[in-house]
Amino acid sequence: MKYTPKLIPEGINVTPQPPLIDFGYLIVTIVLISALIFFSLGWIAEWLAIKISAATESKIGQILISSTMPALSSSVLLADPRLDYLQENLLPTLAGETQPPLTVHLLDDDMINAAILPGGHILVWTGLLKAVQSENELAFVLAHEVAHFKHRDPLRMLGRSLVMLSLLTVLGTGVNQEMAGLPSLVSQTGELIGLQYSRQQEQAADEEALSNVIQHYGHGGQALDFFKRLAEQEPQRGRELTISRYFSTHPPTIERLAQLAQLAKVRGWTMTGAITPLPRW
Amino acid sequence: MGSFLEILIFLGLLALGYFAGHYFERKHYKSIRLRESQTLHIPLITVGAKPPWPNAKEAKLFIGGVVISTDYFKTISAGLRNLVGGRVMAYETLLDRGRREALLRMKEQAIEWGATQILNVRLETASIWGAEGKQSVGSVEVIAYGTGIKE
Image 1 (tube, chains in turn yellow, red):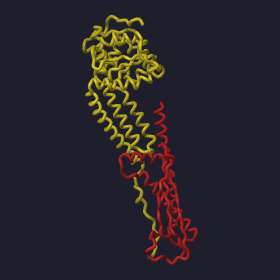
Image 2 (cartoon, helix red, strand yellow):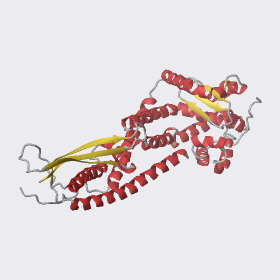
Image 3 (cartoon, chains in turn purple, orange):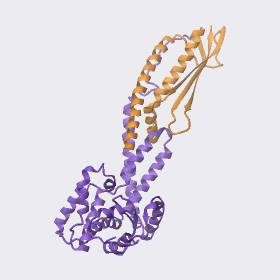
Image 4 (tube, chains in turn orange, yellow):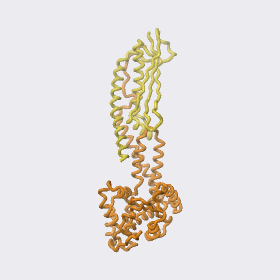
């Protein structure tokens, strides 16, 4: 047999397609599919989470608080007149009887913030108590957290974070070592989405809080003064670390104030009245 | 801030992988095509012992081996492909270059020795991984071997 030299044609073992097109196709597909999975699972998780009974919520709260508290234990104030005042005086007037009952945890730190965990555990930082100038102001912040509790927002958030966590675990272990750069990227975007209540949840909590405060004091005067002061400091949020903490977990204050003012107008609420001073402590 | 920096580094590595990888690949293919046309006159035959052998005066084993590394862009691209499945196009050029380069290295040694034909040519592939850890880099080794003969 005669050997005839011949070059093998190109494009047989290598797909003639630019690598960037392949990459773009992959990125778009994966982002779309993961977004779809994340949102549908998150929605299902929320739907299931709000069906949890008060007793189970209380148990979940116990587990959460016992795992969170050791990290904060140095700053937890157990016997403090401010804690008694919040737990015995202010909270019952705003929330009444709830299932599970609400518990205030006072944390000795200059951070100006308040938060609610599942199971009715309200965290209040002493920084907030120093920053508010009347009981009306404090009542509104507290009523806001109580409203989150009544709407079962902490449970919804818990459901959503569980989905996030399980998806990340699947991605972290299911994907092999080559993907080293990606999981951290995914988890960081995850943190941004997972740790905030939605605008709608915040707005609903604000509205209920204001109506609650007005029911209690007969007017909405001074209730929003704390936020008005925050709004003035808002442009310099980068510099004021203790204050910026509140913004990192809540939407822009100016918008919230505008929405509340609008609501008060529509409902015909009285937005001025006598100030209720804070007790001396 | 930390996460922003991390994303920036990730994109930087991706761009580095894409542009550097692309440049070296083009350069390699240019060299492969040139050398392939230069060594075309020597037949490579894959048949083994069954058919009658050519009348060989001398025979010698020739081995051509090459290790080629993936770049960051290809690695990420293939990693994404791992999630959805399908043809891993990113690695096709890598293996194609490996096979052709290994064959060329074997052939060039045989030509230097004075071979007229190379019989029973075989190709083998092995993957080489860096240390077990997060940032391991994937490389592929391709070996071509065959028996060069002088007629």
